[in-house]
Image 1 (tube, helix red, strand yellow):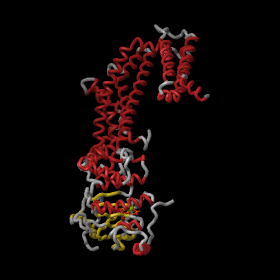
Image 2 (cartoon, protein in one colour):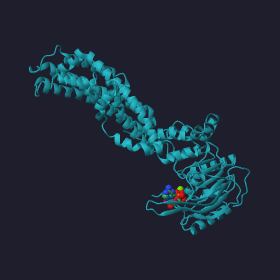
Image 3 (cartoon, rainbow over the protein chains, first blue to last red):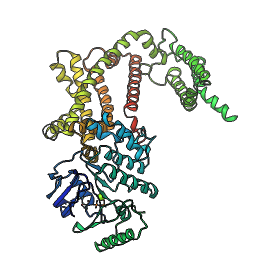
Image 4 (cartoon, each protein chain N blue to C red):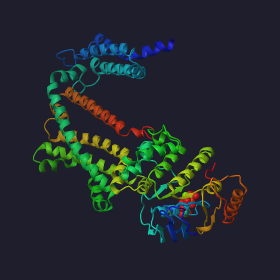
Length: 267
Length: 320
Ligand SMILES: Nc1ncnc2c1ncn2[C@@H]1O[C@H](COP(=O)(O)OP(=O)(O)OP(=O)(O)O)[C@@H](O)[C@H]1O
Ligand SMILES: [Mg+2]
């Protein structure tokens, strides 16, 4: 990928020959990432797409600094990542809200942890409104639906204005309608704050609707199959001919990579 | 209409229960095997409850909350009246069991009416011991548990000793602690604290280790310091189990207290019971047991109230 910075200077990601292996319970070595090279320009929106188990979450966790790489490394703005930091927000695949805190306190958790809550009180209100949870500030996570919890978890990651936002299927638990609305919201936030976005999704349309680049991954061995630059102006139209062409192309690569992305829910 | 009538009746069932107990007590003569008490204490008590249950029944017509709870629990309390009456028949009226070991109500109540001063003194003494021992034990137990849960080195060096010493019933140490501590008060506080300490430390450390890793990962990506992760993530997440530890702790503290008092501490409810038993005053033994039962119930109620307050968030997720 060519490093063409989109206005912003912070949040450029350089992934250098990253390998991550796990030892399974049976003692076998599983390579979750098998030599990944990727350059993400600061301020761009990148979607990761690929079959289940191809290492998408593992890659996000490496960028976040939640786990040590086996070899190779991740560099953000030239600095090697060794541990998590508030400059890289993470919206997890599961909402993982704290059950003992109400929605508002959950969302403001990071601000409190960094002792900047007072200055950013208004941000909290703004993001509660953005994710459509106004009126539920005092509710506890178990009182809300899964989708609402996931939106709260998204707000929690956003409210600290990180340089990089790592999104692991952030809209996976939402219904189609809310999902489209949230896509527009994520796009608006990206435009507004120029955050570098790395989003895992199973939804090709979602990836095309939001991203500058779509990274298609494949499993066994886990690698990047292809990086596709999406040369379409924003806002994108899902029915446009070029959009449909891109979709066809990505689906073909995914098929070639061995598998059609699996549905998020099994019956 | 019919429903309303039965509901009203339900609220007066406790009153009916007292009437049954009173009728049986007044209409049938006590067995003359029992020594006679100074006064008809049991009759007094029954009159007292006769009035209070009647007043409660009337008042509940106007107080909505009381009405609801009485409509629910009325039958139970009516049943209690029947049980009390049956015991009166078996022991007081028929003397089916040896009267020395199974005194009638009047004689048990006499212990309260005539000896309330010493009983209150004993309650006060036990409370002092229990509270002091419990606070020390819970405090040290909590700190130990947090260290064990979060600090790998501490866990490595200390945990085996705790596993070795912890399960030994604290009361085993009574003879030793009585010789080590200059006062019996200090010795019993130590025993009580020891028993609380173990269950709180154990539950705290295992609860902290069981906190989902994801909670810590979330807080780390939000820029949380280690202190924040300990005090604002790990401990709150572990709170329900820590509370369970406190709960077990207070039960074992109570056991330790009673044993310590029976062994050599002067005063206290446990001491009172063994003293009465030594003098073959079984009515005093029963009085002591009643005191303990009521005392325990009060402590547990208090603890549950406290839990509901602290762990309010848990209401919808889990019950115990
Ligand atoms: N902690 C771990 N221990 C052992 N194996 C792991 C661990 N984490 C991931 N793996 C393995 O690494 C591989 C990639 O996992 P990962 O969670 O990154 O997949 P994914 O692409 O996010 O899948 P999905 O789309 O289902 O979320 C899988 O085969 C998984 O079994
Ligand atoms: Mg995943």
